[in-house]
Image (cartoon, rainbow, N blue to C red):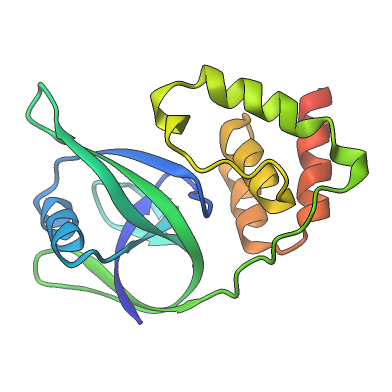
Length: 187
């Protein structure tokens, strides 16, 4: 399938929120098209380069769907998107307006997995943190009994470097991810 690509200095996980302030014409047009067609766009972590210029990206990212938008007092478009499915980028090209589009293949979804007993202390901590984060996480569907959902929410909010977050996104080893969360929480 072909999707518009949005290279960013962030890692988006399935089920996670993505607040953005959009000002470049190519991305304003992309968001407008995605909203009209109820189509997703692909978020990829930048490997080299910048958000507002040329960039190379990692090859695994997450599709995002716009769930809310507003016009900022500064005139910029603000959106909130939610990550849906992971994908693998096979090829990409830049269109005449500067927008990158790519041919992507969906990564099979992580199967729901009950939280192992050794990690049963994590959901109450996560719930407390998400409640303190305010509006961004208010409307988010909460799945405290799903190991991947718990792991991904922690990884997106903890102060973990982007390369490690990207490695987690590319991995299907949820137990290893939960162990990483515990290590970071105990530091």
